[in-house]
Image 1 (tube, rainbow, N blue to C red):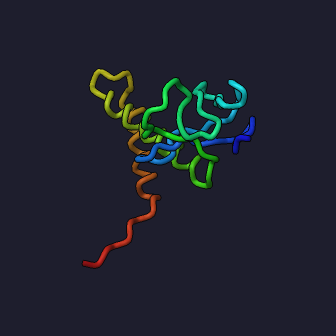
Image 2 (cartoon, rainbow, N blue to C red; image 1 turned 90 degrees about the vertical axis):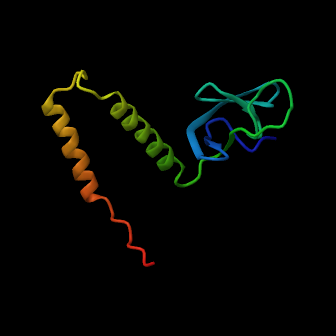
Length: 123
């Protein structure tokens, strides 16, 4: 019997970076040995490795039940990625006018001003 059930929310965890993606268990195949997630990936039913032929040493991501904080981490990671991609592609030929860019800058400055300040460390 597997620890997961159809409909369970799970998190794909990377051993180095933590929570990567949130998904749902959609189905079990291969006599309940293969778990199919909502993102289309297939995993062993215990979530400890991706479903594939072979049994070599595995050091990749694993599936775990979603824990408190996982959704926030994944959401933050994705938002940072989108912002970095936007900034990387931004140049004078970008289709944004000065007013749009000014609104973006104002929003960034407002968020920075509202963010908690790091505690001063005493050396």
